[in-house]
Image (cartoon, rainbow, N blue to C red; front, side, top):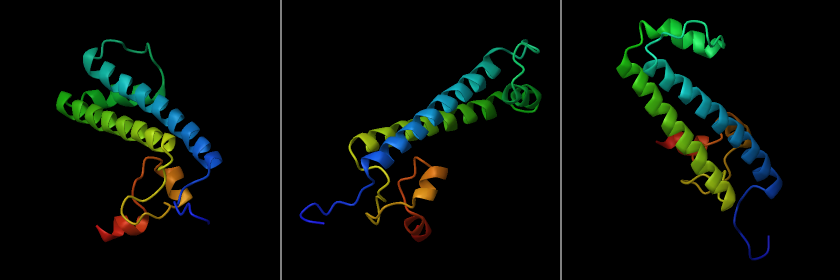
Length: 126
């Protein structure tokens, strides 16, 4: 261990998480565009876009009010911000460290929730 007692993931692990996060950001931004276009287009676009996510938005649009839609957009924007903050933590090597216990967050948990800042034990303490 020597003098450097900081707990962190290896650069190799960090690089892998960065790739995962960048993919998630790209998808999340794409989904956000769909959400936004769903409530801006007044649903006149019929079958232009046949992707399943878009179909779900289309079918749900009758029941999904503008408010619900904007809530969705706000949540999605927060998700993207959380993912981007995780990239910053990767760059300063603090990624994957629980902000409460200071221990490494389980790698399986990070694969599921790559923007997590709490370990399961810290989450359970809340």
